[in-house]
Image (spheres, one colour):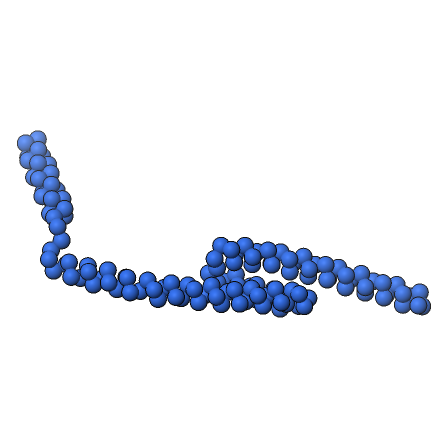
Length: 132
């Protein structure tokens, strides 16, 4: 019984060695043109990918500038809406930092505007009660 198991294990080992040697052989000549074609396609796609990335970065920059304009005009809800749109875009690290800074600036300004509005309403209510 042990002899049969030993022979089976030896045959299995020889089969595995033969398979691994076949895998290490050089690719067939027919595969080389296909590999070259894939390489050429990848090289031709690279400029298109770079152009698309540049266009996205340019579009993001235009939106960032628009957000800055909204902030300057105290249009914080419009700025917040554009910032949400920018958060879904692929940004450069510099643009991402700027968007984060602008988001914090808008949130702070909106909180300040809400507090100022509440203070004004409370002052108007007190003034109305006092008959002023």
